[in-house]
Amino acid sequence: MVRFVRDQPDAYIYSSFGTRIFIAGFLLALLYIGQGILVYTSTDKVLSLSSLIGRDSGGDIMGQLVGGLILVTAVFVPLASSTMAISRWVLKRTYKKLEKLEVDSRRSQLLLMVARFVFLGCIVAAYAPMPMIAESAMSGGFPTSTINYYQTKFMSLFFTLFGVALFLTIISPVLQLYQRTGSRALIFAGFLALMVGSSLVYMGNTDWNMSVFKLNSPEFKSSFGTTMIFCGTCIFFCLWIVARNAKSILRYQKMHFTMKLGE
Image (tube, rainbow, N blue to C red):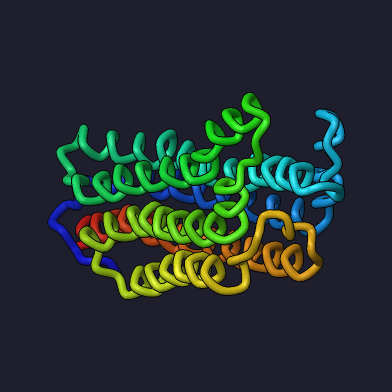
């Protein structure tokens, strides 16, 4: 059930909201499941790209570092940047349409804005040591601090930020619609969003808290692939619940007017 509002003047705009949210959920699910399958099946092929710049990802430590950075660039950074792009071009535009009918969406937009900054933090975390690598290469030195960062801190930092940002992104439309309908189904959608975010934070600080030099290990590939498929599935069902709930507003409006005409 949805909370009845007299004449429900925003029913059509929320029906459009539901369609856009479903599209966002489908795109995000496709992205996460696709990246999970990519890591599970093609990690070695991605790492082999390091040979194009004269480095062997299975050779010395610098070759392993280059291979790890290539995998980070091909998988981790696209996850953050693509999620941020989808939230901007689908979710934010949806909120702008709500504003045209004077529907309050400030809280939801604030969550998206905070998530965008955290996603940018993920990208910064991925490439922050690059100037030190360049400086070491020019001086002929060895980037010890950079190696230490990618061995001990990067995975934990990246996936902690990533989990928080993804949770804020997904919970944003859930909060927006819960303010409108108060549906109990949205509580379950919020739980799915929490599961996605917390699983990434948890994995980033336990099983995935490893050196980027070991990302081709069978344990990481299977764990990452499974988690991404799980996250993609949860994201899809979370935003599907939101979309279905949003479209129900229009159905109840039509039912209300049908009953009025029959009186």
